[in-house]
Image (cartoon, rainbow, N blue to C red; front, side, top):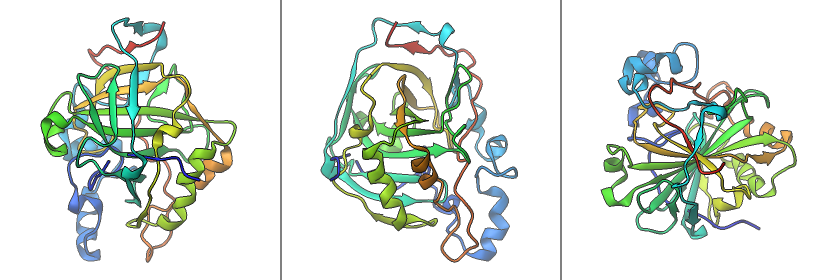
Length: 295
């Protein structure tokens, strides 16, 4: 039995940014060889340390992720509770783009919505995706007092007052992302629904129907959050995100994490390459303030 769901997307690997076309690695072998150095990724030659060479935003003033130092974060009593009203029927597909697995939702109208918290109005769910490591002791992008979690789930929403997702990417309050840490413990039954679908998208470029899923079934019981102004954690690293990072992690089993790591970043006709280590390390916080919804 599935939990219900969400909004529609055609773009963006981990974060969900401007369409990449050529950057998604669908070029011919000869062209791919010529452009290999230009395609961003997580390897030493094209990883986060190199992103700014092609995507200057990556060295911006409001980059994500960041490290959270809880002793320095103040409670802001003006922060409201947040809520979602997701329509399970809006979940459409699940895909492997070689950089993450992503579940895509229909976002052509106000169907699956996020409201409240630090946000100026309602936001539409567009997709969710994950970042994870090569083992259970790391994989999250944000860290909390130096603690790295096994993975991090990002639910990407956009502000419909800007009419299109593409236009929202240009606005400081254009995108809202709920970030949920995954820690190792008891198996999460609802998460297994996503993991079971991975068999159909084992290799890069695969996409399969994924319907009747409401991702709010993945939320922890506690809705306390930290919030700050940041960016997508993948190129082009646009600085348009209001982050809501949930204090309470979601618990998954070690076996469930292993299933996630069974995905491949290589295409079906290529030598198998495990899809692991798709996380960006914390970026300088610079002059930004992180606020907490709780004491």
